[in-house]
Length: 366
Image 1 (spheres, rainbow, N blue to C red):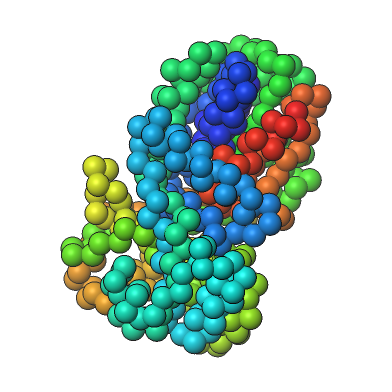
Image 2 (cartoon, rainbow, N blue to C red):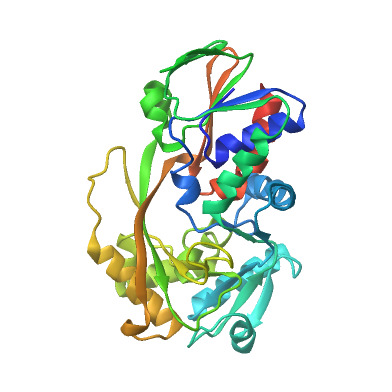
């Protein structure tokens, strides 16, 4: 039994089906509405390290298979990381040396321009192994595909009140299973507060935007220097560390808001096809105030206009939202709760990238 039908919970259900197990997914809402649909749809494989890199590489194949079988677009568009400063170029060169030309393709200014229109780019890199999906379509498509498999059941709109060995207590009565995986993400403390407290779990709240910029086409995801300060394969380079030192005096606004300025484009056939998903800022606390800060949206919009070289009148906001994910030390929480019961959460904002690689390791441990 899986508690939670976000992408992490669905990944565990997919892996259970692959192993010939029966599986029931219990979800408090009528559909996934949390972190799994409020993100960029970016499978950021190459910029990870260690266990996250291994999980991302394994998840990549599962995403491509599910795209075919469940009927949603999983696109091998890759990522362009644009460099507009010498330190950023140095960081990308260090990563290319470490990973090799198959994973990191260095670009000069013309090479960047052939893929994305970014005025003032000194160069960049293309990460061909990264993927792009539409998160608003992928999660429901995977749930529908699972529901059609033998031995799979969903209990939607069913709040879980407690878990113990062999049982999940819900607002609709008790459910029984040999093994239980709790995948409630940032709301783990609502169900298992002591597990969340032991892990130091907080909520990371993001501000994100969907904007319309006529004439802009971005097949790959687009990352910037601020992304190099966020993703571990780049942030540990000497170039990124030098960039952070310079930004401490020159761009304290970006550092203070913990900005990862990146952009993906809504895919053809989607709601808002061609619009750009722009983000994101990061704030950490167990309980956040319910109010968005307009100055953070203004910062993201200004950075987007500067990056793409468009006037203020050329960017129209279509949607604004607050994303949220679980944050704790390390990238993954895997905590035994009771015999046969495990709590699992991706605690670093890379659930879309890694969940389908994480799930097999969790089922191996049960």
